[in-house]
Length: 226
Image (cartoon, rainbow, N blue to C red; front, side):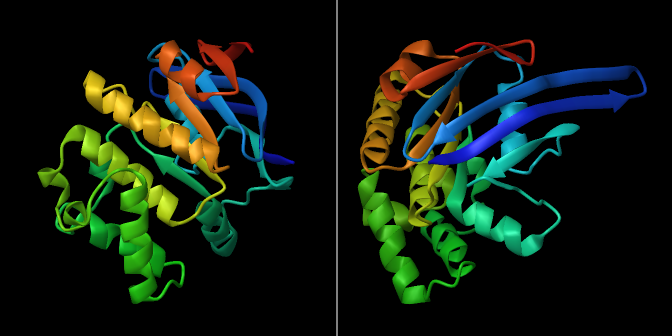
C-alpha cells in the first residue's frame, strides 16, 4: 500500500532580487513500512522537500498524497490527523522541544493534544524513551541538559510516542560524534524492524545505505537517480 506520494512538487522562492527554484518537479512514493533515503549535498533542496511534506513550507505547485488522498493544509482537522500519522525529527531535535519544559513533559503534552489521558501519556512517554535507550531520568531533564545524541534520540522518542506510520528524519546524524551516530542508527534500525516507515534525508551515503530499502539522489532541486 502506498503510504505517501509526492507528485510534481515544486518550490520557487521569489524576492526583490528575482526568483529561485529550490525543488523542481519532484515525484516519488513510499510504501507502508518502507524505508527510503534521500541523498544529496547541502543546498540541493532536501530540507525544503521535507518541510513541504510536513506542511512547514507551501509548495508552489504539485501535490502531496497520504493514503491516496491529497493533504489539505487548509483543513485543521485533516492536518491534525496527518500529523498524528506523519512525524518529523529535525537535525537539531532539541531545538524543537520547549526550552522550559522537561523533555518528558513536552512528549506528554504532544500526546495529550491527541486526546491521550495524562496517566496514559506518561506511560507512553516512558515506553518511547526506553525504546530509544534513554532512562526515566532523561524524561525529567530540560533540553539544555541533554547531549546532542540524547537530544536526537529524545526527538525520535517523541515521534514514536504518537505511534505514527511514517517518520521523516532530516539530517538526524550529521551534527553528532561517531558514537552518537551509531546509537541513532541502531534506534532507527529498531524502528524500521517494527514496521514504521522512514523517510531519511542525509548527505551521508553510508548512513542511508545501512537503513534504507532504496535511495533517491537529489541534485540542484531535482531527483536525478534512483
